[in-house]
Picture (cartoon, rainbow, N blue to C red):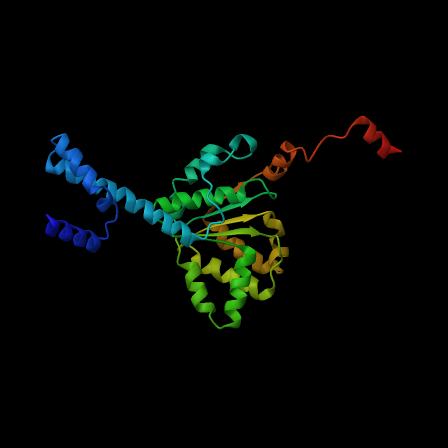
Length: 263
């Protein structure tokens, strides 16, 4: 019996199975108790191993994606943002846009849930075994500038074009210099019709010339981004301000206070 157990442990290691060794003894006892067939016993073991392997894969790919937090679509309050059609977002969660190498852009003021939706779709993509990488525009610019100075731009560009889904958050909070804007164009051009991008921005497309410091370059970027894409415009109040109001940080002025301001 000891020899058999040792051989089993060695086999588990070679196959990379980690869940079966944990449940083997318990399932063996249950199989004997209920007089289960060998096939039923083996099926239960393998099904649990498959589930565990899938969970390990999702955890690993989620870490590699560098997501800022873990938020799902079920945690999104669609009732607070009526400008967003839930059915449309649920359709995007099928990931057909990733399958077809299309892009998705969320536009709207700060705090309305753009990043939450991007992260939620990223988590769905990981579950469907797509590779994902998340970065903010600011971190991306810093990353590319450092790569430029260390002559490693080619490697960095390759890493940014490889994932099935690249998410670039917070476009428009800071103006890009000429070098950063040029590299951004390269990323969009390299991924054109080969990989999907999700962008979030607080600026309308008409203001992107200011972001990149060059209206011609901005037009070239938008031309490639929007050719195969969907745009979700979110209008509404900031979730963060909503929470502040709940906590009592914002309160309506009394008539007396209003009168004092008039004086």
